[in-house]
Length: 196
Image 1 (tube, rainbow, N blue to C red):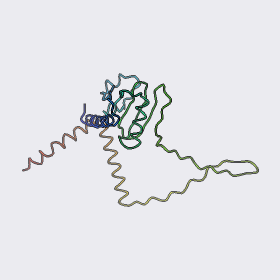
Image 2 (image 1 turned 60 degrees about the vertical axis):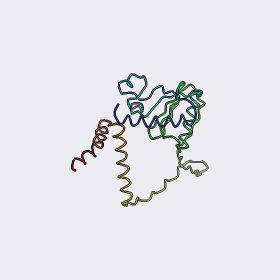
Image 3 (image 1 turned 30 degrees about the vertical axis):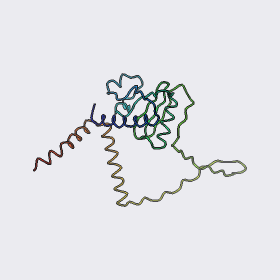
Image 4 (image 1 turned 180 degrees about the vertical axis):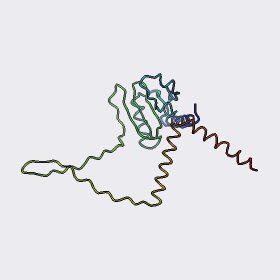
């Protein structure tokens, strides 16, 4: 597997070990890293699956139902004990990944699953006004936003976000380039020593 994928697999394994230590039960991994060719043979699997990146595992925990595992992992993520990522509930296993942003889905026959909803959707303020004896509902006017102040700090922060986003994209989806970069960095000390 590419070196970047191997690093993801190591991070995922560390997360699973933490989960195992926390819940004090054995974990069975049904499916972990999948190469692209194998992943394409699995019905319903996406070509951009977190399994292809080495960031996902389909797991079963001894003595716990899938719903119990799902709820336990969701609570651990909510409390910041494990990496933020995606979780999918299935009848016989739970998909867990470390994608870096929150995503949830339920493909099990059980609808009695609960999880923390950290997404807050703001509803527009509704004002009622009377017009000739009838009620008319109108939305309140949006507040005027202040013009942003462009300071060196803000610009550098934006550049940092752009750089880190680009790095994450290269790390996740351009593994050959990342492998080459890592290899160059490994050879850097030898290159420096060649001058002495």
